[in-house]
Image (cartoon, rainbow, N blue to C red):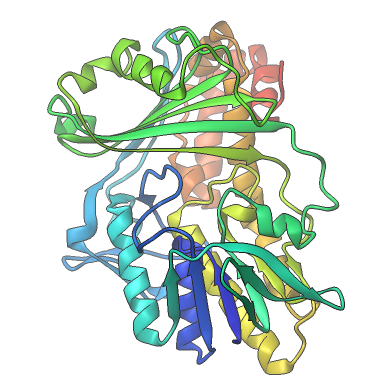
Length: 426
């Protein structure tokens, strides 16, 4: 086997699809029983990645040329124009996105998208084995040479781990040996619901901050993704310092409390019906200093700080990891040095963006309700959308406008802003 991929999420399927198209003998192993299933909550929101992946909305669907990916219109649930953050006292700051065909931001049927990628990988010649659990890595002379399953040992020239938030095999490969020990965990529960109260003007993403409306004993973070009228995804996160969350109630109790009693979202869910549920524990830790080892590549959520890279970035990183593996196989250099091009790609703008996002969420989750109200007032004068687009001129213009309109508030809350950006506990 040339390339063995662990994990059938967007990164793993993208890697298998790309590797097979490049002519590599490719095998993907996934413990879940069929394509399209997800082991953790995912909002299914996709967007281009500035500088790496462009996008185009057409009548046929969403096209991402660099990925050679067309997502049919039937899989697109809705187009998002705003992402709002609401403090406990109701103060709001937001990113308001223009409706641009050349930068589509949409919510898609994530299960159907995974099935699409699986079908394209299989059509290209990749072998996909579902319901197959990898139990460990095979090593020889300090190099990863394959994997062990419950049934057999399988050898491969390069092993690519897209295992997701478990990080088991990236840790076994030694990628985390030089990083700081784990400090935080996020316990996430989610529901997809039919919500008759959700109207067209609600479409977008809503994140709620603070502890005022929950009885959970640890810091929390709530989010609602509304792709279209009548549909919504609800995500509720609790943060803790230990891998076991010790509470008087179940995680589902806190999600239901959020859905029914938090006035910022409860009206949206009058008469809602649950379609499906998911839950996961994510380990929050520094990204490893290197994401490749001899014969091994870590990709996707298995190496990100917060454990959620996003679907389009994951597909791109899986593609690039496969290209890197193919070049290493052609040259015969399967060492970490031979795979280092992927390491350099990941440790550039990708990691900086993911690290900042993770720190902001943790920083806000750790603030008091009063601090969040103050911070939201200060941020309410800035539109965060240009920072999502990654273009320097709009970012500079928006920052200058914010300084002119909000300088007294910025000076008042400068320490809070720093805590948010650094993910610090107050």
